[in-house]
Length: 235
Image (spheres, rainbow, N blue to C red):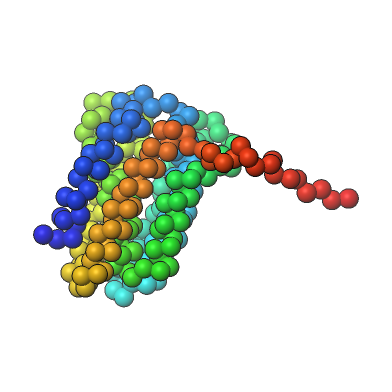
């Protein structure tokens, strides 16, 4: 079995929990309230900035020109295409830039982003390739499942989001990311292969946590003990 075959089987129950999560269930039903979806969009927009930098690092570290080009193009897509999707929804909801900026970055968003950035800086390239893979593969898997569930609902309120992650072009990029991970795993030693396994699992856990944090409208429990930010004044 390939690395991807093995790790997908290992995370099977977790992946099903992602599909079954109330956030994704409501997203598919079209009943997800705008407050939760807007919260998710704000957090995901910030995550994508970090994710794009991680992909750019993978591009710089790749020894294969084709792999470098793939990661660089994926970084561009994360910054331009996916964030444009978020912006479109937020504008539709009537949220201003000031209102979205006032939303604090959630603990889960910061943790997931920081984990990937640390991996990009400190781990071998094969481990980095495994760590970024769930953001490709899990989203495509969820998007494809939601497309099947909503095939007859042309007026679905989240049709554009579903279409983005079930798009054949996105599925093709997932296959490229999987092929890179499989190839790097084939030439990795046992220790690196174990680290790849763990990186994929950890990032997939963060995928579940990210949707869960949006469902709970996650905040910092310690925020209640911080003084309001001081505004500097000049004479």
